[in-house]
Image 1: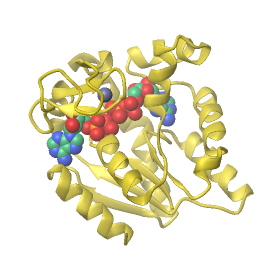
Image 2 (image 1 turned 120 degrees about the vertical axis):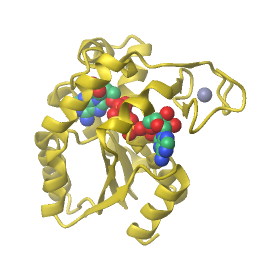
Image 3 (image 1 turned 90 degrees about the horizontal axis):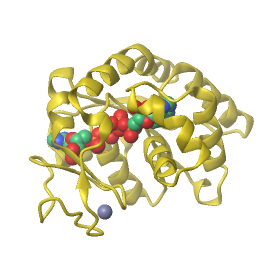
Image 4 (image 1 turned 135 degrees about the vertical axis):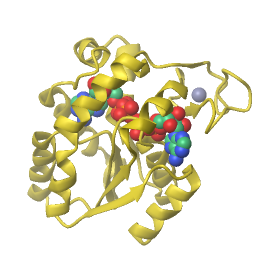
Length: 214
Ligand code: ADP
Ligand code: ADP
Ligand code: ZN
């Protein structure tokens, strides 16, 4: 099954995408995680992506598409995947669609996790990410067992640079301008489903499973 998670920054795409990918036994592909890993490792791609990310903007489509096309061509993607944070623009969605059409495939579901802007700043201020394995926590809603330490790998937890309130505001603007139009795009492809992302993590997950019929 090929699934796309849509939603504002902080809507819970990563949280749900990881669970869904585990449940279905398919890879979770987060372009944000891939960019952050490249920044950490000091690669060329990381160097190019960093300035755009720090400013709360999007990494150019050409760079993003190159990495995604390479990723979905790998062996573990043959039975499907859950995209988290991709596509984020209409040109990215169109490029993905053409690439899939060319091999007789298509996206099965685009899941829009709906959370109003008012709730987002709160979510982001409390988000903490593991520098080592990428696991995500929340100070209030998904606290780690031990403060500041990752449950999975004992890595240290930090606030992402782009989760500071000024940058979150900018990212929300970018979301409304460039990413929200994808809701209509996937609606017109008859694969859009929507969930109320203000419910708790478990409830949102159960709604998604029901909508996907899995
Ligand atoms: P969030 O999950 O909070 O929305 P991500 O980890 O998905 O954040 O993305 C962090 C940043 O990485 C984005 O603000 C953007 O700069 C960059 N990014 C991630 N995915 C894409 C994409 N598909 N196209 C362009 N930029 C992207
Ligand atoms: P995204 O990938 O869309 O940016 P995340 O999955 O990283 O969003 O979630 C953003 C923050 O909100 C994280 O700190 C996460 O633990 C928390 N969170 C995710 N889903 C929920 C939920 N349903 N209720 C409360 N907090 C949530
Ligand atoms: Zn970790």
